Length: 521
Ligand code: XMP
Image (cartoon, rainbow, N blue to C red; front, side, top):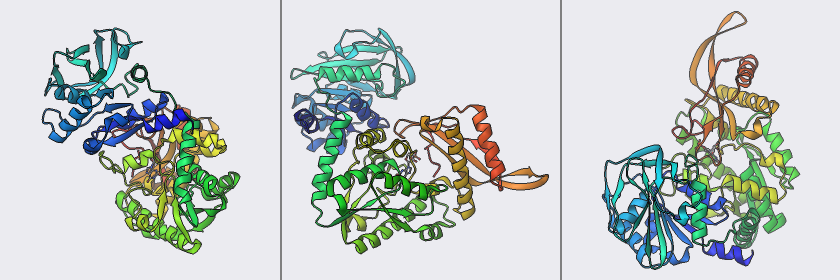
């Protein structure tokens, strides 16, 4: 690792998580600009030493600053007055700073969605911005008074304080009421870039640099294993990259294992094994299809299914590890898996089988190594490119650990599984034919309980409804449905109803995430 990179990793930008919806996006934006950023929950505020960070960003929250937790207040006071680390407050963070500085925050002065703001003062934070700008607001409270030493930099069209600056201990403290991290704030990235310039952060977080960091950490962790390590590979980008890294670290002591849970798409397990062999991973194939499917049959609750799959995975791998004499387990957990499993402050959205679903006994029995746990998917893909992993693996759509079980609504049945498997394959094929597969994040079929009366070959059929879901996303934390041309939808619909006998209706899912999630289950 270069000296500059070492410094950047030792001295990252800290984003404090107060449970806000966009915290992860702040981290992403900063990393996109070449600066390493990490997130820590506010519950650690007391124990954090602000001087070990290049800057501190206080992010959003669903809570109100009007009734402020004294521990938060003390923690922020320490950051503002007992250090020289620059601070940027966003939304809740903006109000938090104003309040701790001695200003006032009121209730019932919310602004939501696209809002115009007027920049009043020339300041390096707003370099490159117009006088009038459209930003994204999402707040119920607002700052209505600042202490005398703080300067208002911008006002919203409703007259609320949209940005301010204070100087304490010779360094800037900024607050912005809007969300520069969301793409609806057109010049948001410029604002982050300006902030990083103000704090003189070196731009050292390049794909090559973080690959060396990931490798170094993996070497450190894996060198502790005396014997063998088992890597769970599924053919997905994350597990393939994690296994290649682990193989680089310990060579033939790494045993890649592909567990077929029977929840893959059509022909997928064969294709996956071929793909993995091409990157030098020659996994042991374990046929556990019946074990998983028989346990899932009839289970309605999605979370219960996820737990069953997590538990079964652990049991299968436990048996393999015992047999192989391995003491370390390598898996491709990435940062959003951890965030969405609710291990931070954000609410649990889904139990990702590899995180919250992996039972405690397994983590106690084996050393679990997750070399990619601080990376986002696009960062993993960049690491994969540098490692020379072929494009067709890196470009594969993300596929959930619980496989097609995440796409069956209502009781899990073999019939629905089969429909889902075949319909998903058709959707992928059509998108590939139209050159759209690589342009979308995921494309798949969902099968529920609802039926639709149809006519097939002049006779009445009471068939299933298949919902087609095609989304675009950068990191799966938010997503938009793809506006597919009608001819593509038409071909998908025709092929599914012709090729799958017991389907009589195809629908297209047109809801973004949020409020939906990508997978239905
Ligand atoms: P949702 O449905 O929560 O999914 O919007 C976000 C992304 O995560 C994938 N996903 C999973 N990936 N284990 C995984 O490795 C899981 O348990 C899991 N559940 C969902 C999903 O396909 C989407 O890309």
